Length: 386
Ligand SMILES: Cc1cc2nc3c(=O)[nH]c(=O)nc-3n(C[C@H](O)[C@H](O)[C@H](O)COP(=O)(O)OP(=O)(O)OC[C@H]3O[C@@H](n4cnc5c(N)ncnc54)[C@H](O)[C@@H]3O)c2cc1C
Image 1 (spheres, rainbow, N blue to C red):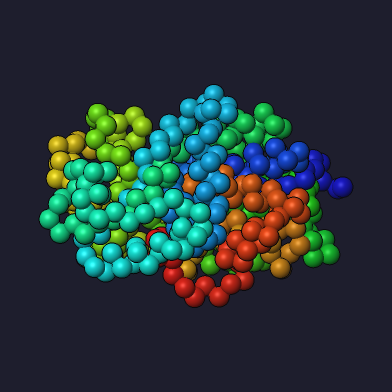
Image 2: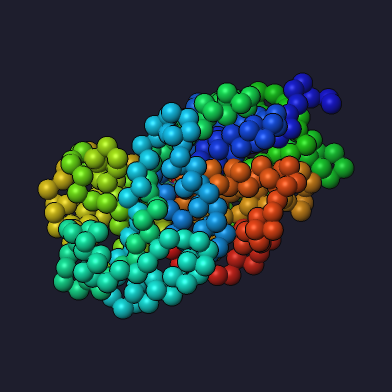
């Protein structure tokens, strides 16, 4: 080995995906290095996530990965003694128009077949779960009681500390600048501070995934777009599930909100058209737009005071599904990018799947999952619950 330190695997990016992946690889006994150009763990998109954790997706791959993630999040405190503010409030997609009722009902059979605990509730049953919902026009909605939420900051720090305890090495303020390869195979990485050797390099660079892949001569269709979030003051619990309203209106595609374990309501909206680019400066248009939709849905929310807004990036792909798999262009190079709006919920389950890929121990289910996420798929469809 010509490089000063060598590892079994190097992860580029210590974010929502890279950090739990470092944990899963270290737990498998591998010597792992995670590099991040920012000063500490989770400073990219991870800390901008609002904390929603669901296995309620439209495809078997994300359902399977997130069911495993939910197990990890839900049992973390019990297994490690560390509180990540997990709260199992469930998710509810509400329908006020036949269009959304149809979309949501059409997904139910596939979701149940994938092992998801989910049902359609008519309006009276849904009002028992979310009594404050506007009643006029409510048709019903889905309810998946085993989904939940947690703190992205506490969770990533918990994964980071556990990974370190298992021997994973993290280097911050260190940027990947190039790949070292020989005979079509990756042998290490070059950074702005040095060189490291490894037979496996995993690109988990989130919104910067395409830029990092280009350093290996690989083209991946990951394009960041920006989304804003906000948090209110804390109040006594009045809201169980994350509420998602997928009705498109002028200016926004959907919005979602929940009450955190510590009492704050945290919320987000999906702008329409998308705001492509890396701009993370907050806007003055976000809050009036999302607040009017939320207060229309749950009038009681008008009494809450907003404490802070922020803006962050979704690493988007053309079809709304992540890109995970070995690169054909360079042996030993893996892509784990394009998590869209779901990197926090995918992270721990995906980290374990990546560990099985590196160890060569994937199962039949894993291989089926990976066909959905293949970097070489046609990117034709569109995720229905993105
Ligand atoms: C407002 C908002 C709300 C959201 N809500 C949710 C939610 O409720 N649930 C959910 O699951 N997801 C949510 N998301 C999406 C989630 O934040 C992302 O999908 C997720 O963080 C992406 O994870 P990642 O690991 O791919 O990227 P990141 O967490 O951004 O990690 C990538 C890391 O790579 C590092 N990096 C980049 N280039 C280099 C380089 N050259 N060298 C070294 N390091 C590099 C970056 O510094 C960064 O730390 C939300 C996002 C936003 C903006």
